[in-house]
Image (cartoon, rainbow, N blue to C red; front, top):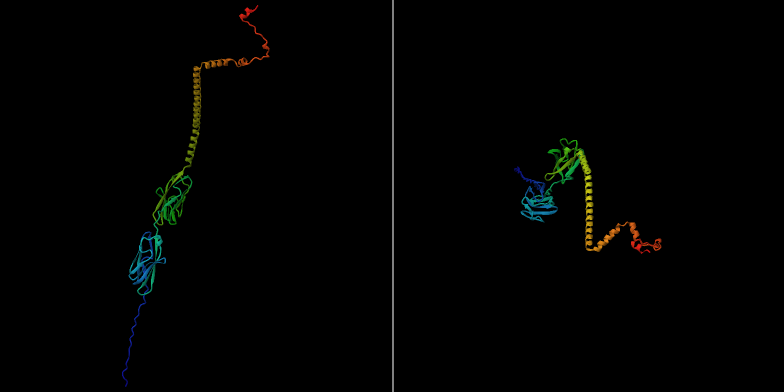
Length: 340
């Protein structure tokens, strides 16, 4: 007879290990916007324990660590900090040149290396926003066109034109509206925001204010004064000028004649004074020299003789004259007595 059958039972145990999950590096922000001279904090959180890691920027190493030990490289020692075990990085007083993509690499205790990227945008301090005006004041004849030319120093987000506490135009980006009674006779030119008013009247004179809000920065304003001139007033001013000109001609002529007469009289008085001074000098000379007085008397007597007689008296007798043979008879009393 056969013996009892022996049955062997084998038990196998299977242990199924889960595939290791890949290391995931969570970032608080994939992009950081910081004003210049501000601090940039690259906050990261790995999904598992990290054995080693590093931070890189533009192919250069900023920081490295192995376990609890780390080093800072290049020129980052004085203005950067590394926070372990997470591996977050802090950069202090960043500048525009620090903008770019930063990469963190981590190697877990088990598993493969993982990376994450964070982009840093360092914004420069906004410059003072200004609105340039071609003219601060405009003079336009009535029924003419007034063009308010403006130029903002940066991109504008929104703006408006105002006159006497009323809105003429408003805009937001490329969209704008014209208000009140300006729709039919005004135009707005974007993106600069210049304004055109057509066929203006005297009542349109005054101060116009433009307000603009830039993409970055504070609102700025500019004011332009419009003077609308009345043509009739201009003609009246011209007529008044002509009247003043015509009236002033006789006055100018009278002034010239008066000055000329005064100069002539002054010259004549000068001559008279000179003659009197000369006569006084001659009188003094006569008083001191009697012969001079006699000579002058003789000359004066001679001057009283007619010119013809003077010439005969001064003319010498001709020797061949017929009158040379005549003998003058003595008709005196003495002559009578001497006759036989």
